[in-house]
Amino acid sequence: MSAAFRRPRRQGGTTVLLVVLAALVASLGLVPAQAAERPVWHTRVFAKVQKPGSPAYVHVHPNGRVYTSTYTNPMGDTMRSRVFEYTASGTLLRSWTVPGQDLTKPRGVQVATSDARGRLVLLEKSRARVLTLDVRTGRFVVQATIPDLAGAGHPIPNYAAWGPGGGLFLTDYGQNVIWRIPAAGGTPRVWLRSPKLAGLEFGTTGIVYEPARRSFLVSQQTTTDPLDLLRGHLYRVPVRADGKPGVLRTLWTSGPLDLPDGFGIARSGNIYVALLGTNQLVKLGPDGKVRSKFPKAPLVGSNGSPIAFDSPSNATFLGTRVLVANQSAIFGDASKHAILDVEVGERGAPLFVPSASRLR
Image 1 (cartoon, helix red, strand yellow):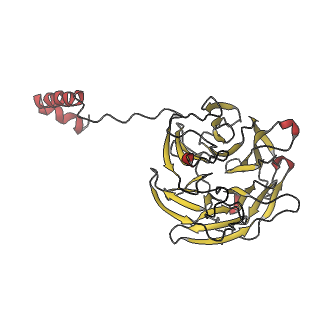
Image 2: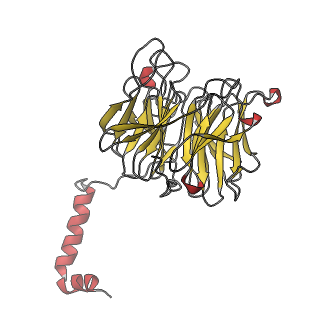
C-alpha cells in the first residue's frame, strides 16, 4: 500500500470529518461537476466566416491553429479572397488578402494543406494557381499555374494532398485530371486522366493519401455516365512502385445528387464524407459500406446547432471532432457561412506531410 493511502489511517477521525465535509460541499453544488462528454454527432458553431464568405475546406495545421479561406465570391462583387486563422477553440486571430487575382473572373481560394516548412498551400481559382503563404511573414509565393487542357474546360484546382516522394497531387474540378507537382516545385504534370473523373457540371473534389495502403482516396460529385443518374463516387487509386497510378476503383457510390465533397479519414479507417447536395455527413466503414448518416433526413440540414448544414463541404479532424466548412454554395446565404464542429467520437488519421514537401 502506498504512502498516500497509509497516511489517512494515521489521522483517524480527521479523515472521516474531511470525507463528510467533501460530500456535503458536493451535494450543495459548490464543486463544479465534471463536463459531460459530447454525444456522437453533437454539432456546435466553431466560428463564423467573414466576407467574402463561402468557406469550402478547413485545414488543421501542425502548429495547432485552424485555417480556412473564401472559395467563392458573390456575383458582381470586386472583393479579393481571404485566408483566416483561428485558434483551436475558434477565436479569429488574423487574416490575409490574396494578391494577384483576376477580379473580372469567378475567384476564390482554398487552403488545401501545409508543407514541411509550415507554409500554407493555397489553390486559387481565377488564375488556376498554386500559391504558398508563410504565416510568419505574410509572404505569398506563386508556385505553379494549372494548364488549361485543350477542349477540357477551364481548370479549377480544388483539393490537394502530399503523396509519396513529397509530390503535391491536386484534383481539378473543371477537368478530368489529377495533377502532380514535384516536391521541389515545377510544372504540374498530368498524373491521372480518366473519363470517371469527368463530372456533369460537378467534378472531382477531395483527395487524401493513405500511406499504409500507398494509395489515394478521391471523391467525385457526379460523372458523365448517363447510367449513374447524378450519383457521386469515392474512388481508390493505388500508387505503383514507379510512381504512376494503378487502376481506379470505386469504393462507394452515393445517392443521386448527394454531391460528395471533401472528407476525412479516422485512425480506425472510417471515412467521413460531406454531402454538399443533401446537407449531410455520411460515415463509411473502411470497406466503403455506409455506417450512418447525419442528420438522417436529407436537405434540411438540421444538426441541432444554431446554423444548419448548408452545402457542407469537408470533414477535417480536430481531436475527436470534424470541422465542417458550411459553404452555402447553392443559396449563397452569408448567415450560414461558418465552420461547424461535429463530435464523431474517434480520432483522425495523422496528416501526411513528408519532409520532402517543400516546393520552392
